Image (cartoon, rainbow, N blue to C red; front, side):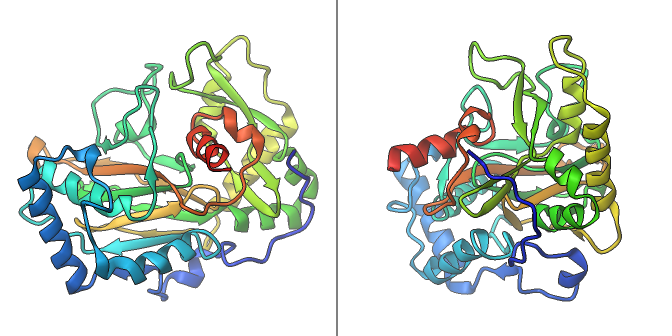
Length: 338
């Protein structure tokens, strides 16, 4: 069972955005040799007629990527927890070719996992015109701002294919740095956040499972502090009559969490370029997106592609993650590996 953490953690993942604004070490440009290998591998898989999900590192060879891969994996688990991989050569590519390049590179970093109840392994992140009044709609399918949250599996990869006409900036924050602030200011509320909260599963739960999942926001297990947080899904879960009402202390803890996230210097904000891949550890890093205005022309509208990956050597996961839609697949893969 997770332990109760009662002290701050001073680790590389406990960074503040102000510390990184003039530091470009988190940006990993792809060098010329890797770009050439990506283009060669793309041509090879197209000529072989391999399907997207049949691509593996064995048939999408990137020998020059090996050192960068080693550094990235060390960054994801044990480092600051995220990186921006810059320069995937998608200029003049079709949507399918961009997906092939993205998937091919991604398989060198981890194993793709399902992102929804239908088992989809690659998501296209764009506004659909639908809204959260419909139970199966998720925030990424709108053009609304998305508050700080994490995705599923060990890490997410987000490829920028096209930017919006206006807005849509990315923000990252260290969930460990937020915890450290909470433990210093209100240790009583840090304890509350290590107790279960109900989350709306947004129709992505396993067959026969309830419409909500109940899990602590912070889980300290075998020396690792892992977060799972979506305030908007916690609030949405309150519409179900079977879900207990949030207590005043739970609301106070959530409000303090949000206040700290909004404080100057806590988050890192940046705009992605076409060909950029944002990759982040979901246990250490929360991300958000500002609202955006799209182009009228559908061919120019904001478009991101997303992968969820299990790392080859990820941290131990608390058993309660077995029952979360976000982390169940990474948890199960560790169990099979063990």
